[in-house]
Amino acid sequence: MLPVAPPQSPAPEALSPEVDQAARKALTRLWSNQARAFHAECLLESRQKDTRVEDIQSALVENLTLPIGTLEGIQQVSRGDFEAPEDLHTVGINPPPATGQMEKDQYGARLQESWWRVRASQGQVLAYVALAPQGQELRVQTLTLRSSRLGSLMSRADAADQKQVARILELIQAGKGDELYGKVASPGLQASLTPDAVKIEIKQLRAALPQGKVQPRLEEGWRWFSSEGWTRSYRYKLPGRKAELEMQVNLNEGDRLLSGLTWNVAGSQRGGEF
Image (tube, rainbow, N blue to C red; front, side, top):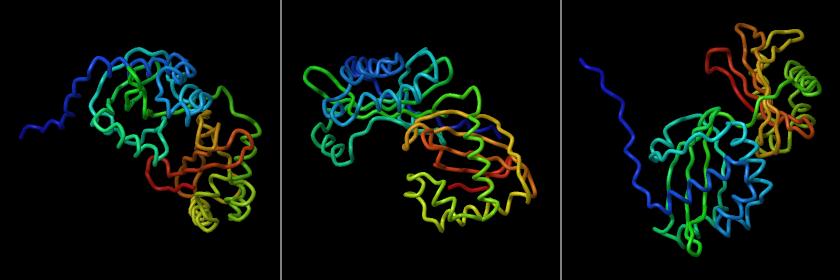
């Protein structure tokens, strides 16, 4: 019996020269570290009003386009190609929900959608660009970028960060969920989880850790822009009660508060997060 080839995504629809040119111009501006020019020349007027240049510079340019390297090519792909990969980080420029719906109603079929693969020296990014007419031009109404990694690797670990990680582990091993939630968790983490939910997650990780002082082995650290601002993430391997564990700790850069933690048994999906 012959193997069945996986289904291929349909070929992308042909774009008008105006759509092709406007989308490529916007993506090229971002990969050229030209946040201000992108804001002034490529964004729809309503996006200029609700999107700051500083946010474009931090969340898109420094967080994604600069770390992924020099632009090497922009290729149109289908919507299926854009949506197929899983576990990719997503950043972009989106109107508030009410504004977005109003603009969809306003522009209707004149809202032009396209999907792209951006190749750079350090990897690739999938991009969705929605363009709307403004005068004689097409401007970006919505932009979505998908990448396997945000931010850039750090050359060395921050000593104060490592001290905070050691404190977090000590609180987990001691089962002190209230202290972890009340004194160490960031405002964003507190808003997304209840103290009881944190206690449940801590209980599971505590059961997987051995007794006594744990010495985590740092694998890598990187700096990226999250919903809470600049964040430092560290990935560790550490001994477990039955098997080696993998753990990632996210700390807000300004105050070193814990904005997230994920862990699993090495080589498996068994674990948890908070």
